[in-house]
Image 1 (cartoon, rainbow, N blue to C red):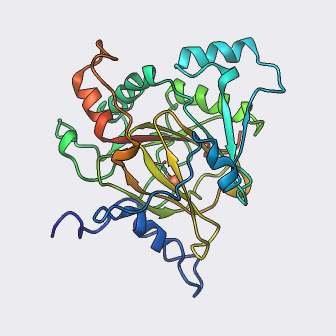
Image 2: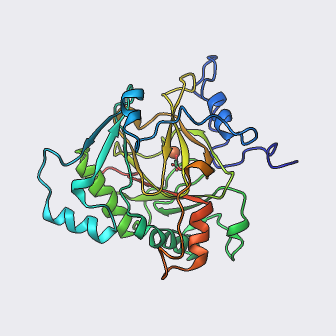
Length: 307
Ligand SMILES: O=C(O)CCC(=O)C(=O)O
Ligand SMILES: [Fe+2]
């Protein structure tokens, strides 16, 4: 079997059959369209939150998040300590027919990305968290999607979270709280995090994240190479919209958008690459830069329990 014909294998592979009730699946054809590599799909319809011409073209509303509100000194400090863009520069984008979906472009500074990646790899390799990441090297040649679960650790087989678990690493708790508070979505206490590692040519099948027991938002941070994100509806009979997610972008799903189908059909689109050069990061291990130059990592912060 060649790589193109290879079946998609990931943890959400089978979550699709539900919810259709005899209606036509309008999600899967779009997922397939962007997953294809030869010939290269036409990416011209993918919404780019960094291109203001796209705002009128796709009806995207973009605003500076703190335009009309006071910035707390403590939040300024938290952002700085986490390696985030200064708060007055934070922009948030909202989409037509998607109330509760937010994309905040380039929140994590590029300069701090290698450190965040290395932390994710450390959590996966520590032996203290569940993971399917190849333990001893080999990651550069990996062709499967990998994950590690932190905090209250999701069980892929039962599709449930246990009652409790360890604490989520502090930077994820602080980031989730800062984002949720800034968007005025309530005080979030992240008690679970899933880190997905996407080597080139991997994808994540359409699915809904419905096992969390609280109504808190789901907050995700992208590192490394650019992906197409598909945001669908409550069933697969709705056509998804494609959005570019790039290094440092935050995506938030809340309220009506918390339980919609979504997927990642492709990562590492060459025309949209972010490059991490040694000259820019003289202190960083080459292995870390190589990883960021070909792969993508996504960190999803969640709140399983109500407190
Ligand atoms: O990689 C992404 O941006 C999405 C990840 C995701 O949907 C999940 O972890 O549930
Ligand atoms: Fe998800």
